[in-house]
Length: 147
Image (cartoon, rainbow, N blue to C red):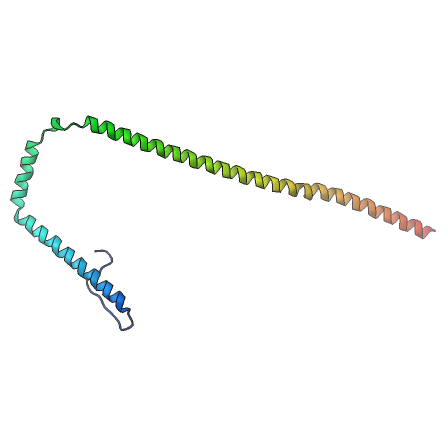
């Protein structure tokens, strides 16, 4: 079995509980392996009998007796219902995702719009006002100097 080794080497620093669990796992693996080998050995003994039984079942099988049409229709109906549910869930998930994206975009646009209003246009206006104020101050200073 995967994860169960036949040989277990332990050190003095290993956890005793872990060692016990490993030994139990090894024991159960060995028991299952023993049972499997016994079944195979019995099958080898009865191989001729098993083959004969299978031949009899094969010869006695009549495919016309199997009424599969009702079962097929029920199965098809069940599969179609499952597919419809899956498609509905897929659509619902898509719609939820679209709504989230729209909400996120709306929030981003609002933030961007606010930033734009505070950003370039206001800076330009402020810069123009600052330049005009500086020119006025210079003119005033030069007028005061002239006096």
